[in-house]
Image (cartoon, each protein chain N blue to C red):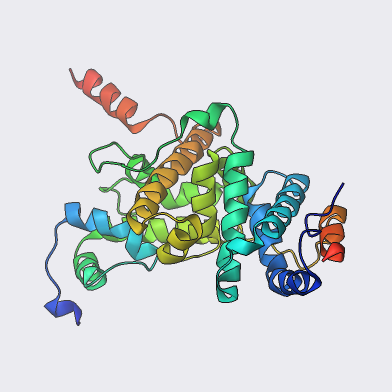
Length: 81
Length: 211
């Protein structure tokens, strides 16, 4: 669906859609409705940008275990298999 | 001590190994993200494998192995590492919209300033360590859901499947966990002097000064 055809929403409803939108888990035409609202609402736009920034920071906490050795306990369990 | 695999036939043990090996890195990684230390994470992964061996019969389809192992990992984490303080956080199910959610954005943003975004400036001041510390202070159920959604990028459906809860519950727990996390970060920002006072205190002060 194109944004133009999406339903109009106010800031109160937009607020409810932000979390799922930022998680890329929005349902139905919520994405288009929110994006249409963001086109003309500075405050909600700033909120979404902030939530995206916050999520990107959390995503960066993903650990790299490629150089991590297995603990002796885990190694023992696998050897027993 | 008897090996947890002793009860299984050689064929079953082979299957278990084939299921576990490709997912081992994922288990270690998520373990590290959930726990406060590497030794805690190693204990968690070891316990997960023991439970997997003991409950191998409960895995219906080997195609669901990753979900099954992740489910064991998170359940062991939530039940085993639940501290006395967080034992009260038993039921998360209903989280009404009317409940005051803490939002860093609402607390920090200044809608009438057009030359900066104070909320973004504060977020950029946080070190990764600050975020990890804030996450570590969350109760285990909240931490698990933040790790799965925000750190690991799992879909709500995947999280619902791993934790065996409805998607609606995933959304409400995420909302609550995010609120708790943001409150911890806000408190840190106040401690660091990046934010003078709570907004309501600033506003109350402004009103009092006018009166």
